[in-house]
Length: 202
Image (cartoon, rainbow, N blue to C red):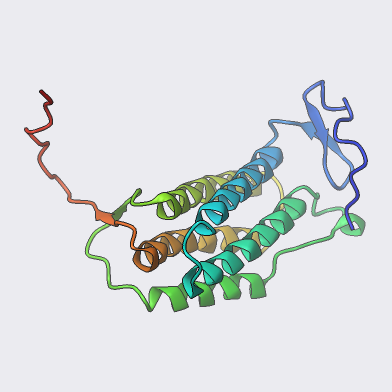
């Protein structure tokens, strides 16, 4: 059980922070950048949940709420794993597993079966749920890039990169699924489409 007694400690005023495994490192270290972006992503998922719960009560709303809540739990697990140096075995706590990746794949496959094949890329937008899920996708890809950069310098968990890679794919499928289930518009990219002439206002 995590216990937080005091919110501020003043120990980070000099630009350093303490990892869960005890070491003090700079706040712009690649490890901090990586789990900081995971934290940002978790906040965005929370926004999606808020907009999702504003939808009329239905099976789709409940299913998406359960899935997103589960992903938020995993993102905290991921942040905890990234905040712990792998060479500190006595400090290792939560670690993502192959089962977490497989669960995501099962969810993606089940939702994708309900969707028509894509003939082009989708444009972010449509409605609040769909739009913020697209933003989740892009922030997830940024977290993935930062984790790749970290992995080139230091060891990270073996299932962390597969999980975020699959998660970004999941957010894309979630956005399409939500658009279809909630009647939100889904616009497609039209390569090379001419700029309109009727943009002027009077």
